[in-house]
Image 1 (cartoon, rainbow, N blue to C red):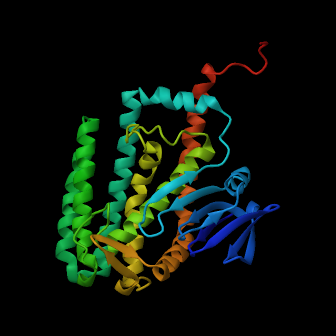
Image 2 (tube, one colour):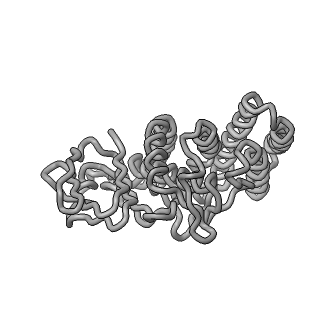
Image 3 (cartoon, rainbow, N blue to C red):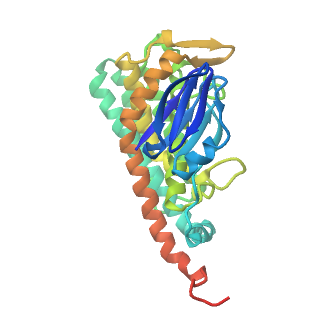
Length: 325
């Protein structure tokens, strides 16, 4: 199964039986069998959809993400058919009220994230001994946080504080890895103001998209998280799931610039916003799809495990299908 990235101006999508037909300026450019698609990402300017395209994609189980043509943010998300086991979602909401469960779930996520942050920086020390001092300082900060995190008395408020401190320390180390021309001085967004943050924002958006899909396919409610509490307009469970994967994405973005897959020339400034141009997005998406297999497998496994646990618990609230009305 594959992802279809559509990032061309004046593109039109039509249904052709069980295939998606692509037209450009009225001329047919090709077709893609819908049964081969898991995801469709649309970022092209003035992309037109024939009536029924999104519904037909949904019937085949494909999830559609519509991105802003210029900024690296989501405009809309269309999921496929819902899972039919209501017990999973009932149990998920029930566990949201269980403080001990939420704390254990959250500690696991933060510990996994911290482990990957340390792994990234230790790898960076070997690859960039010229900036060892900055990296070592960040590593020492993360190791102190790791000791504090091991305290069995850490509550959810303290946990969030430690996670935020770890993120600041990690990015402080990462700033030493990128060329000065990239003007990367730390994490910023809405809008991202430099090429590194532009790539991080786009990658995190795509990762979040994969997490929403994985949760939905497993029968979970992407809106109901245990670390990121439910909030209007946020898929909090997806936000939970991607936390341990953020350092993996950070390392991948560093690799893109380190290997000159992406260069400063691929970016432009629009006021305060740094934008990745079409040629750069093409390279980005190509490499993203090649590296995404691992994190998608991890997300599927994590969601499947949680769904199995909740399914067993949720059966008590379900009406038997054999009961008479």
